[in-house]
Length: 305
Image (cartoon, rainbow, N blue to C red; front, side, top):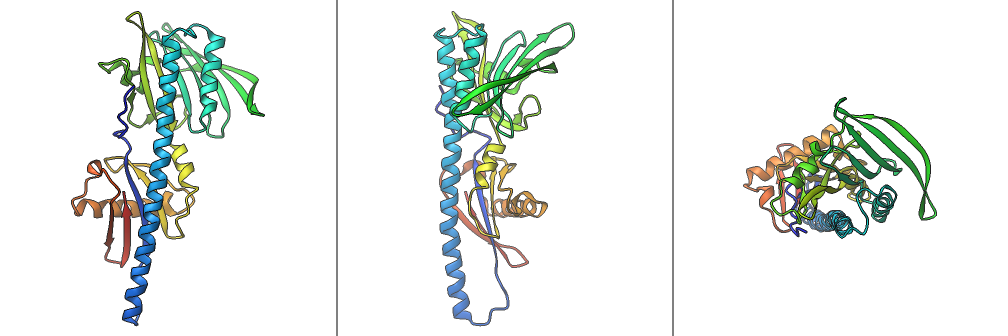
């Protein structure tokens, strides 16, 4: 499996904290001391938050990658066959439940079929299966709903329907099939998860048996999982936390501050502009770094990546 973990999408990490510098202070020595104290406090907080977010994201994606490896190994060694519906369902649900951060554990077949265990935005657990119908250009959809209780899950009901879902057209399927070494996992860019599950990223690896392609194993993480973690961070009333990709596109934001508002997005854009003006490229950042910039209104931006 690949140990490359820079994840092109992720991971310029920007923590943005703002403090309004008051122009009306008269006592210059006090102002200087107070400003230095504020800066020292913010920089310490910034380093702490950056470390927390980096650790959480590393853990989240390490779990996804290790799950892909584990599932592929079980299927490759034929401990469980891809055609054994009952056993593969147990395997996928068990892995989905083992890590709270995982959103999908999936397998796609070359003929368009798919089966997967998924966790919805409200934490509900489902088993999803689609059977591609070439004549109708759509898939027959089955969703089994489960309820988690006492460390176990219990079947509740079955839902049937139709879906425009063809496995080889999914982002993670295409990414895995594009690998020259089919034993190595690959990360997708940010993409739409199936069945209106929001945006996410996926680790995927091709499965071959006796040199013949059987399908693709994938584990997906919804971006909402990152935002939920950011919401647990304490950054103060004027603080905001964002995760952006190496191009500066917003991946996740702390929603219980101004970060997720229009004003927060403007603040992020100003911060990124400040970095660009100082010759900083997010894609080139390899260690914890901090900057300070002040705009025309006297608002100071303390940034850490």
